[in-house]
Length: 319
Image 1 (cartoon, rainbow, N blue to C red):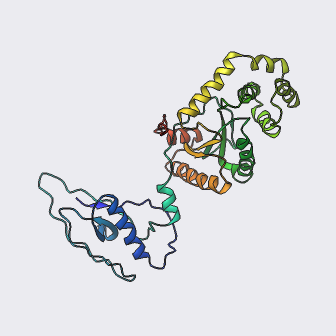
Image 2: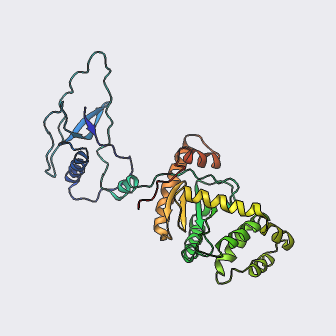
Image 3: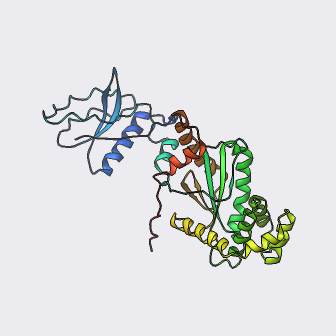
């Protein structure tokens, strides 16, 4: 049986001076990963045309027909042995010759992280004014974490530049060695019960030096919360359970440290620079747009479809 290299159909401009040589090099690496000898790039019929495919040696292989000369032409592959009468011929996957296997876009696609199932029902969420979104960014954070505070400026830039189709969601993970992180998370959740989470969230991160209970009340007054209700909710054991459940969800999905992010379910760890965020956002947006092109119009349904088969448990950390 032939092993054929599959590459994602991503539009990319080849920058090599010798594209055929690079294609053959990529093919050779692929066959080596299978412990097979490379036969070369073969022409594979497809309708009235044909495409090139990487073929590795097996017991029914024909001799190599491609060379590494820059201007070498790919010859038509030898005919396959006729399939047995009781087994239908299997179609081989193919890839267009225009694909640059070594392009940054293709490499980025293959190196993407596994997707996780991140339910967002009940979590604080900021949705575009239109109510429509293609991308959901779940932030896993801790109000006493300095790196989380630094990440806020990056998120603000994204909101200014890209928020036309992005939903922002917050997931608490107060780290145990941050003594005031849990009280701060409870205060933010108390504000969430009065639909003022994001205003309170912004104040907590903008004034990280004081995380006392007295300061929490002062912030609540500043944004116009019902203070009696705020104090009652802050002391409510059920609110503490809400924070604990969010922390458990974050850890189960591998977000043990903060800040962590999930962009349409795909993880991005740490306070990354904005180009890294924008790269992941473009991928996530393209996935959502493809579902819209197939007739799906509801934004939440698109998100749920994307994360439906995502992982619910991260791999255990290696010691």
